[in-house]
Structure formats: structure tokens, C-alpha cells
Length: 201
Image (cartoon, rainbow, N blue to C red; front, side, top):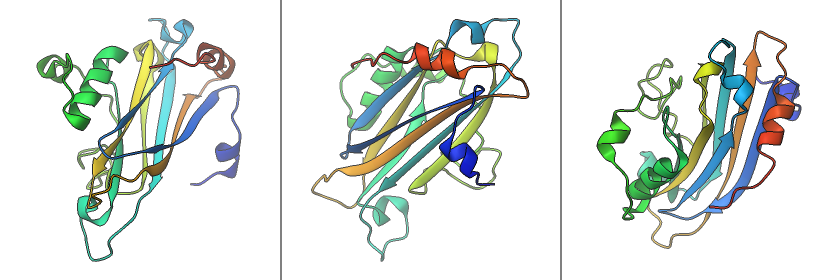
């Protein structure tokens, strides 16, 4: 259920990051969140909820039905896989977006495990029959054991060609929340400090 409290306020057990930007067709914007060491201790069994929401605004053609022909430019988001470092994730994103020559190793990436997102891009999530990319508002979530968290969680917003031939920018907003469930463990301040410094790519 929608909650104004959760939308407007964090707690000691929950932290939210957001960014708004513009993106053009065949571009990808990369983001990373660093996870504090104390959350990744092997003995820890805390449930961590990660929620990701992408919304964007694109011109439409009302006579079209499919996402790729209905929208001038369509966006989606993706994340790094388990154990995938930022530089390898970046190479994958750039190769997929505009076929940039990178060191991307497809077989190596395919061998890595995906996070168990509830909706997913291919209608194979727990929410049956729904693909999150078929909308201009894309929400998904996953619950991860704290000791499974990576050192760095990487995200990418990708812009794909629809019917627009001019490559006009599309405005978007990306929101990522991290919350510890069922315990009073405080994570807000530790994660905030870990991500205070902006990393330039």
C-alpha cells in the first residue's frame, strides 16, 4: 500500500538515494552504492530489502501498442550480478547499449547469479505475467541476506530507441532504497557515510 511516511522520510533502518537526469537514446547512466563492511559479516543473517523505482517521461504515438513503438524513447534499468565488479558491469552496459568495443566477457557474466527480483524484465518473476520494463513507472524489489550483499551494488539506466529519429533527451528519476527488516539494526548513518563522496566515471 502507498505510504506517505515511507515516501517522505527515512529511518535509522532505512536509507533512500535518488537522482533525476536526462538521457538520450543509446546512452547508459551508471550508479553505484557502496555497502559498509559490518553488514556483510558471514555470521549476520539480517534480511535486507532493496527497492528500485525508475520513472520517466517520453513522447508517445497513440496509434501504437507495443512499448518500443508507442514511446519515442523507452528506458529500463538493470543491476550488477552477484560478485560482478563495477568495471565489468560498466563494460556490459556499454556493449549492450551502443555496441561499444569493451572487454565484456559474455560467458563469464552468464555464469554469475542474478538477484532474485520479484518482477524482472522478462515476465518470469514471482509477480506472474508482468514485465517491469513495459511501463514508464518501473518498480521492483529483492530481499537479500546481509552477508550476501556485495561491496558495491551497481545500477544502470538505459535508453533505447523507439520511434523518435531525432534522439531527444528523456527526463527520468531513479530511486533506490535499502532497508533492514525485522530488527532494530541501524544502517542509515553507516551507508550515508560510505556513499558521501561522489565517484566520477
